[in-house]
Amino acid sequence: MRVLVIGGAGFLGRQIVGRLVAQGHVVHVPTRQYQHGRALLVHPTVTVMQADINDDETLNRLVSGCDVVINLVGILHSRSGQPYGPDFDRAHVQLPKRIAQACLKHGTKRFVHVSALGADAQGPSGYLRSKAAGEQAIHDAYAAAQSNSFTIFRPSVVFGPEDQFMNMFARLARFFPVLPIAGAKAKMQPVFVMDVAEAILNAMSQPWACGQTFDLAGPRVYTLGQLVELAALWSGHPRSVIDLPLSIGRVQAFFFECLPGEPLMSRDNLASLSVDNTSSAPINPMLGIVPTALESIAPVYLKPTA
Image (cartoon, rainbow, N blue to C red; front, side, top):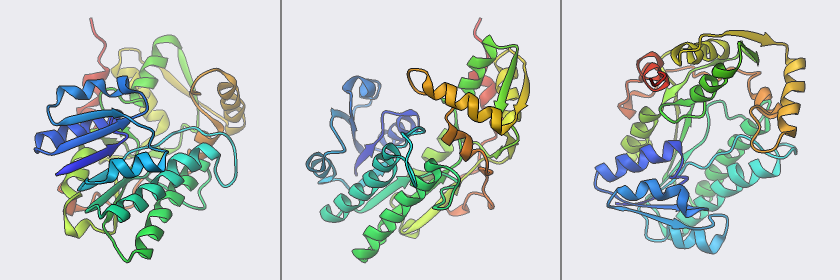
């Protein structure tokens, strides 16, 4: 099959592309900057192209002729706005809507969209509200076309080598004797990146997955504070975590937002932590996944090098 992977140069995308190639698929990966996707060129059936997916003409050209389109685009930060900021709207709502419309226009066999566990139109953060709005936009587009040739996945926090979660806390532990964290009691259920990739590939051409939404979460629930302590321990820098009051956390997040570059933590991120990021049920057995334990993977890639 010919598969278009939007966001394929990212952390999860690289794993999915590798699996697709191993199964014999031809894969196209658009990216804003060509160099971001150069690592994928080692795969013989991957084409990386510089393209603006926010341009309708470009998006239609990319989707045309593809059997499956996978959308992995997601951002953690946005300018403020209600019910979500403009950056969340563009990436999490308008883009999925436009991809759905392009897939319907060109008769794409399946559109696979990766959302987020906890997506909720009434959620406490713009991130969660925009993720829910993106899902609704897909449902609306396909309902209008009387089709259900889409599948939505809702992964929890994704861990694995090169992740920006456990690795971030491991880096912080190198420089700080204690780690002050707001929302340390928030619960989450991290899921292994390869499990997410496998679930997507197992479902992308199956009729039983049409019109379905699947939660993807790991086998164990942790608090954020526990995860931070484990990242520090496994990276060789054991540290204690101080649970900051949310009022102080909001001040801290505002300070991070004022610094140049991507903020370490934003007020919207903190709002997301006010609700648990866990699944009420195990991974659907139809997906053929036995979730991998964090303890079997993270200590290996976080282990300090000599």
